[in-house]
Image (tube, rainbow, N blue to C red; front, side, top):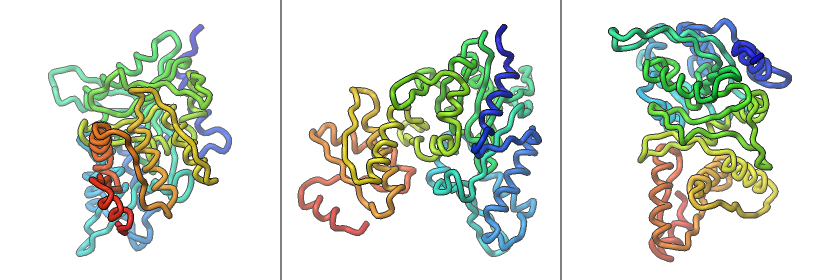
Length: 352
């Protein structure tokens, strides 16, 4: 007999909160009102000094809510990167800058990790002639009170793609609005097949990815996937370190497993001064891997203020520069070309 969907949901939550995991199960958070109240509490706790110990008034919190209801998942990603996870509040004559998401505090510091289930997404369908229903979301992971990773589950008698179609339906019904407009990553599973993909208003099947371990073995079981990808710090790093914003396409890109393993290997090697190479086949995302590897090293090692990218052909140079600039547009780094040796010397010597 196939395992019931409710049992799969329960076992997943048990895994997420098991042992030294930093996810806390919040069975009391079921509505948007609950989530906003929980988010407000976390925001106030993490910004006590900036708020001079005072709580946010209702009017001040409305300012916050208005900044965190995004028109698209991409806009939410822009805010997470470009604004560095901050909101602004006008208090009398003073403008307060409050930190919502500090990606330097992964698995510690101000980061709060919570898991909710059976959230009630109310009827928000704009087309009142169409019969839209209230929906129940399966499992959602919150970071500092904001929904970041949403998981849809099916039992083993259903294909995992039913989860994909369900999320697509929810998006078309306008369920991912309000506080849920912040979601950056989706996970779908029927227990034996588990996949992930970046949040996008127009979901495309070709961006669905399975997980592979470092030895290239598929990780398909939902519990094994949770151990590999959804534990802390990995889940937070998926959002903070392995998501890229493509300014040209206006899309969020979540890196694939082999790209993430390559970047993590570079990170480990850099700690001990080792060198090496990453080998990619054509069309497997070399440019994206190289951009994110460089970007993460700049984040990890404050002593690094420049990275040099050598390319062996002019057409590749133009192509790579354009891609890097599209990725860096919302990022906190600059991408510069050098047109000749003198220009290169000048830029290497400069302090910017």
